[in-house]
Length: 133
Image 1 (tube, rainbow, N blue to C red):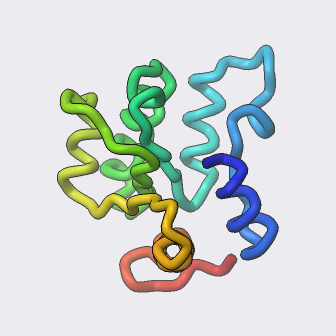
Image 2: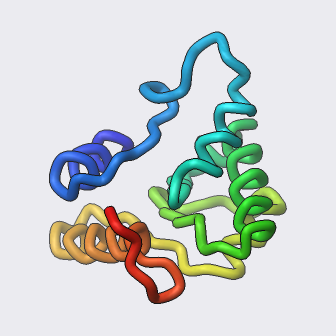
């Protein structure tokens, strides 16, 4: 999914993504870098899959993004369900999923076109106001 996001959002739509493997510095504290990027970025995209849900990084990013969203009273998280998810989703992520729409990836080409439009809209608009890209 990361390659698809980079191609569509960065190459085709001119948005800048923060990609863990590319943009976080090795050797520096990962958790601090995650927090800094959540604060610095306009939106945090959480791409959800069963494997990602099992990771500590998922739980930490979800917790940190949720805390930032609540403390800043800002619509700062976009949820993308890449694959069907199991039961037992971690607490802060389950809270976010209960409060907001989750975009669902599809392999259907027509559905993908709608997905990209909806994702771009979610990234560029907050509380009905456009964000300058």
